[in-house]
Amino acid sequence: MADHNHFHQGPFDIPEVPDFVPRRLKPWIFIFFVLIVQFSGGVYLAAATDMVGTTALMQQDILMAGYASLIGLAINFAVMFRVKFRFSTRFQLVVCGLVLIAANFICANTQSVPVLVGTCFVAGWFRMQATLACNSTIQLWLTPVRDMSIFFCYVYIIVDSVIQLSGIATIYTAFYSQWEYMHWIMAALLALMIVLVLILVRQARPPMYIPLLGIDWIGGGLWAAFMLCFTFVCVYGNYFDWWEAREICAATYIGLACLAINLWRATFLHHPYISLRALTNRNVVRATAVYMVFFTLMATEHVFEHSYAATVLGFDETNLIDLNWYVFIGIVAGCWFTYVTFALRKWRYKTMTAIAFALAIVYLGYFYFMIDYGVEKEMLFIPLFFRGAASVIISIVFLTSIVQSGLSFQEFPKALTVNGFTGAVMGAVFGPAIVGEWLSHTVAKNAALISASMTDFNTAITHIPLGNLYGMVQIQALIVSMKEIYGWLLIIALISFTVICISYGPLRPWAIFPKWRTIRRTLRRIAFSEEDERNVVSMEK
Image 1 (cartoon, one colour):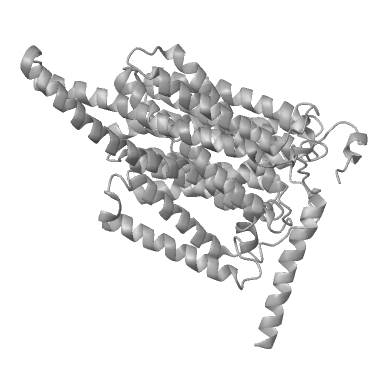
Image 2: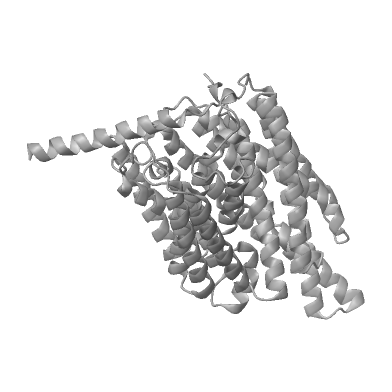
């Protein structure tokens, strides 16, 4: 049942912030902190081209580092509430700020791939913890009844918008100066955040610090290793020619071994890092399946759009990054639409999923019918707008379904880790790996067909230089191949949309988060039961 007592407690207040700060301003201070933290992502993928040009790093190295940050973020979900109730908000924000400053300095100066990936992984972990510290503080301000369908609309308008805005800021920073300056700017903003935290957030006295007992740190490390290996195979697979290379084979064996060990340990541990109950929950499995299909359909974002706009349309870096504004507007509109329909009017999960897939159909269909040499930048607004809206709708809806999955709060954070990995990491690497390999084979096939006909035509009539002819063949083959793949993906999207429409799904969102004191009591029971078990074992020895 929802707790409506907060409506009768007067204006929302944050006790950790001194009274000389106006009450209405207090939540906005924490939103400002969230924005700074979210902008600080270790490496900035928008600057990948500049980093490749000035360092010894490859495009795949930078992508791997960026996805390592997402893995660190996902791994944190399972323990983030334990850390929240172990340390004060002030301490968490200061430590996370210092770690992110160090990460920015390291990422701006290192050319070692292991150092870069490791740094981004750690940065992702602390970025998530700082985000939770801020968002949990203002949760009751956003939704006094703790309705997570409302709360997640706020979360995604912040997170997904920052992804687009950070890309824009990074490219323009690199354009007017150097890409490293983005790291210095973010380090300065993080330092400002730390100063403001020290001034405006006081050391509150929680009822009791809950020790970090009963956490399966070994399992957490093994899950992180599995996720990193999975990402390595997807990112570097095409570069190393997949399983023809020892590197890909080694990553596959290590990843499968880590997964097998984790599943085995989950059968007998009291508190595994990710339990079998969380892995096999119906809503978690359903969300994973939808993510895999949906983000594979959206994988053309990573594989096609940059190549098409740069190679065929001839856009430079600033024109390319300006397309982020179209996606940003779509994200804002998608969050607003989801807030009105799903969060407030309680439209069904099935309806919202069908709408997201319908928007994906518009995105794929537009490119299938319109892709050509003469497309103006403004003509790309419609597909990119619908892509941004569709992605944010599907993310909000299925993250809300995890809260409504029937799992106990002990299992809920573990399900969030699975959802974070499948939605953010697998969604970003699995689909692009498949579509990228598909594109390379399709381009090779079409180039061979086009070159044969153009060579005969050139020999008979035009006598175009072979170098120019080769470039024309490659561009034409790229356009034809993109259109072909867009067509197949459009067919898959139409089939998925039909399956969703004919399925039976009456469930409506009612995802109410428990009270913080209830969560504290649950986590305290887990921690101290683990401590009691250890004491019994030591006495028996």
